[in-house]
Amino acid sequence: KMSLEKLIFHMSLNVSRIFPVPTHEIKNGDIANFTIVDLEQSRTLLPENCRSKSKNSPFWYQKLYGFSKYTIVNGVVHAFTDRSLPTT
Image (cartoon, rainbow, N blue to C red; front, side, top):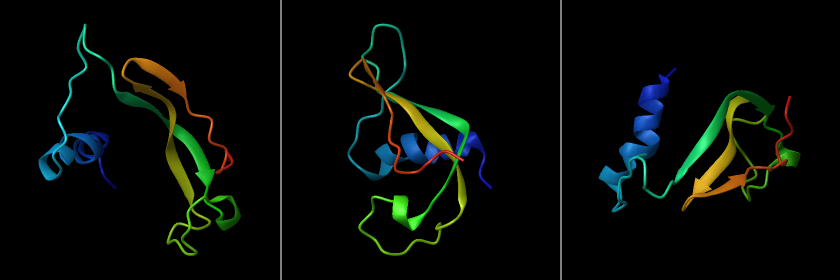
């Protein structure tokens, strides 16, 4: 298992070290770009509910946790309503 802090580092801050992507801070007056995640929400990954073109996954039938609820892009809030993976 990985700590939440380490996961955030690898999925956001470390990306800018690998790819030419600018880093951002959340501070008053700046344009917001981030995702709000529900760490308690779980779903079971089933082949018939997956949108991927891949026909295999090591995660089929696994209960997965942590799904996006909202994304904020350029200060605009977008609700995440993807139902391709039913909530369990």
